[in-house]
Length: 284
Image 1 (cartoon, rainbow, N blue to C red):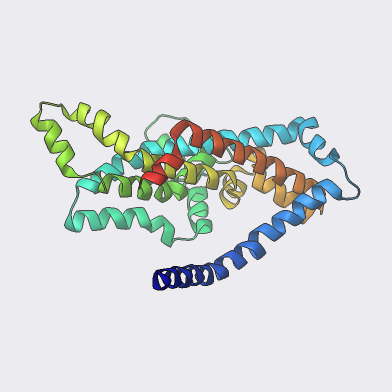
Image 2 (tube, one colour):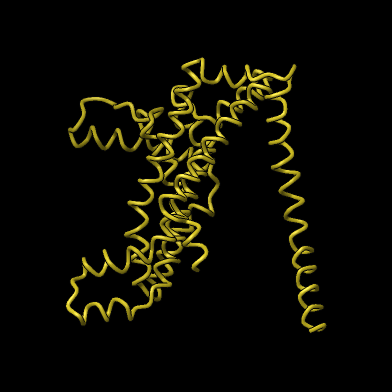
């Protein structure tokens, strides 16, 4: 018993030692700046909630918050629609085909977000590839405004965040034993029924993880909305940066961060209650 207790003690000590660098980095790079911003939003220049009241009193800031939530939801749905069929194909592929598909999924992660965003700027501008193609096909008589729109922002963000949806779904689908589908087919189940009653329920952990990851990343996206959307399609991250870097209004920036944090935590809790993400994680 003493040997088992000693081994467990050493294991706990080793675990704590391994986690210490990560926890220290998390505290210094994330928790400390966040705490400073939240403190200034509540106690600078004196204990007050006027900065938070300003967020909801001015309709401009409410529209920015609503736009952030709306675009994040659109990007999440778009990436799910694109990622699930691709993950299914990857699950059923082997050899060189699978390697090619994996490379195509991971390729955006190997390229800078800034480079990908500028590529979309070239594609969607007034004299870009899309406008030239539309005019050559006779679908439009002149250039169409594609850049600096909400659709352009959602499209570019979905392209950047697609791997974060594909990989969790692919991992969940790969963990489904092939015997389940074969047994259902031998019992007379159609491919549609196999998908609805077997594949989809068992892949929900990957879907839940991917949706949550993409939605949270979309909420804090900065480079792509700033370049593709411009001032007309400003999102919360761009607004916070403007308050900190240009207006030097740190207390109000902290209030914006606090509101975004509360909304995000509320949505995560609602998402967890709806899809049971904690049950999925605990069952793996």
